[in-house]
Length: 96
Image 1 (cartoon, helix red, strand yellow):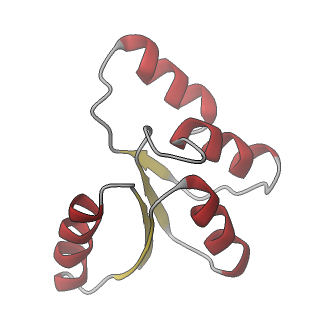
Image 2 (cartoon, rainbow, N blue to C red):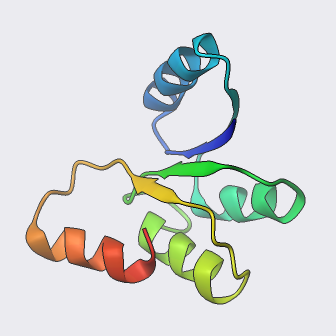
């Protein structure tokens, strides 16, 4: 399984990646939405783990671009500190 982790916190990304690699998965990391979009142009992923609060292009905007402009149907799991109902609704509406 190939997974893309998108999180601006390098420690969080590396911790998740280390664990998933121990489980035999292939991992790529991007540290903002624009980098994720670039990786997705050239690679196929089975799942994307996405933070919401990131520089350059936040997670919600990144997912909206993936769904609307690149027609990416890859499952996306949001991993974020944002926890209000409005945040959750926005993430689901974006396509996560």
